[in-house]
Image (cartoon, rainbow, N blue to C red; front, side, top):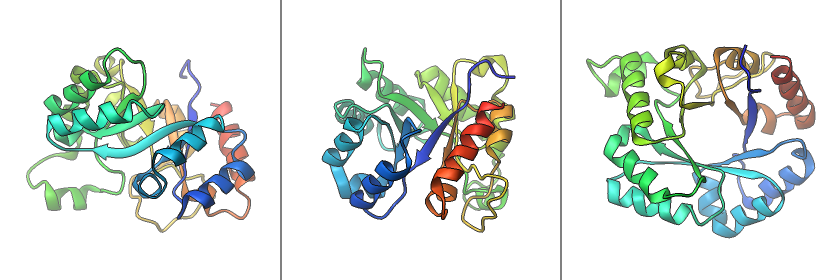
Length: 234
């Protein structure tokens, strides 16, 4: 059993900043961490992020920065001025790119930098289409090691991949796990490698990310309460 309780991050993937702010005020008083993706960030910009932070929530900005090191360095420098809790870069950009992101943060403790390993929408078949001759499992370990060496605070991976990172050499990395589906949520969406909140917590997740099961529910408060209860009992 993990010593630290697994925390819930809500993926606030709604159509507009106005809808998102309304949802937060109505249903998210028990939550601390909110993930904002590219759509809401582009639509709402800095002012939208500031309004969420002023409401008392911590923002996980998930834009998966992946570019040449100097470009990523500039993006992280700009993001560091926004008051974010955490920010994602893509490990496929390589160690030098991640080191540039780490150096851009400087001596600041935030934002935490999480390296995305492989998207949870990719299964082995999709992986082989764009990575012929490469093992997804081996790639996951190599990318995580590069993230650790580069100074990332953690990695984003599927619950199915957590077993790869339970070895002592990965002990310095926090694990953020998307693709979480409560056991009574029957989904036909684009996530392939999924798990329940309890399964992810038992496997070593430090944070789990849940979006559509909450956002699409007729009773979001009940879904949130059930997830928090599952995590509390692990």
